[in-house]
Length: 117
Length: 114
Image (cartoon, rainbow over all chains, first blue to last red; front, side, top):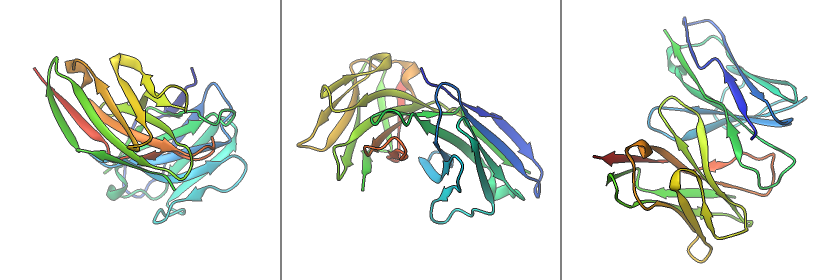
């Protein structure tokens, strides 16, 4: 079946540095990918919708200058957390749906545990 | 607009007992509905999905869910809980476009007691 691969699974960075997370769709071309953030014991919060070849659409309250999204190809979207601070520590998950099927489920990456120290 | 309500943030059952996780949805279009499971520090794995075919949907690991339009419900059940079922479960609803994100409920944490 379709697979979405996310890398890295875990990263620790120093405050003030930037971190890039990659999300790849392995079995289909994803014109749209989704980035979520998940706090401990909570549901997924949609951060933004990544659109291939155009600007991402950010949800209300998400800083687009803090969370840079690039979707340069049909199989790769990246999320860069810029000038990271401890409050950015969280679990980030990407997702993609196969646009060729209207009733398709969303496929999720393995998630990235970001810890900013 | 679509939304999902999961009743009960935490459900605890004994091993071998029936598992029932509740999900009610609201949708302005015929819904597609999904149940996902999440284990600690992992992404989400699809358990099953309803796509307007059979109202009783069977999924992986012995789980099933029944779509009831009159009750706007899509409850998840399993006849006999295993210890390995302990996880977080999310119900989600989608519109009819493959380019829109799923809308998730707040999740229900299932604990299984030996």
